[in-house]
Structure formats: C-alpha cells, structure tokens
Image (cartoon, rainbow, N blue to C red; front, side, top):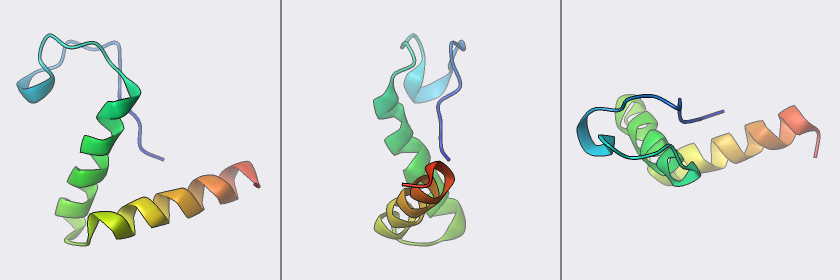
Length: 56
C-alpha cells in the first residue's frame, strides 16, 4: 500500500510542505513510471490489494 512518510523534512517538489494524503497520488505516478505501466492500472491494483488486506 502506498503511503507518505511524514513528518519528514522533504526535498524537491514537496519541500516545506506538510505531509498530506493527496501526496499519495504522486507516489502512484512514480510506481507507474518505475514499472512502466499505466497509472490507472496501478490504482486498480492498489485498490484490489487494499480490499484484500482489509477483507472488504
């Protein structure tokens, strides 16, 4: 499951920003880029993993 790691003194695009849930979208985009898959596929995979983990 993706997460942001905070509180943490971020660098780069998140420098001087507080950790917030919306940062997870950037994490998903990075996962897609690293794995060379569509962002939508990552969201779907993560959604299914969360459902399985929480048994919902």
